[in-house]
Length: 162
Ligand code: FES
Ligand code: FES
Image (tube, rainbow, N blue to C red; front, side, top):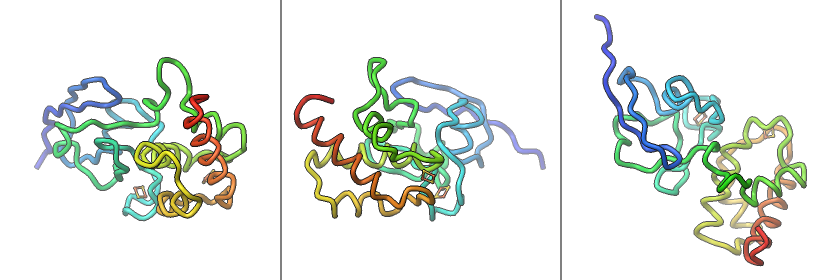
């Protein structure tokens, strides 16, 4: 039997999209292949690495485990939507300054997960940062630079210098 494409409406980074796609494709696949938003990365596709992480209604969400048809009323944020008004988010600046991104494969999900943390807790402890980011696997940095970058961004955002 041949699969049929269906219309899917998605709101991504504040933009409305309507795509014709296969109903079995995951959000990860539709973001990358149908919308061209390749900042979201393929990893295990088993829900174990969080490399595919995006935000849905402001909360971390694994795009490899979700079907877009179930997310038509939700606000999806990918790394392409993290900069605002043409300016990088303070987390992006801090990650670049402190070398918290090395190969960069985990970085989109790491940044978005950290943003969700700072949106709900502007002054997280090191332990809270560690907990929030614990599901996002990074093979390069050893995490310390990532934690320091989140702390630096939080400080600048509290000071209004972000
Ligand atoms: S790709 Fe590993 S959790 Fe989604
Ligand atoms: S920077 Fe390479 S996996 Fe995290």
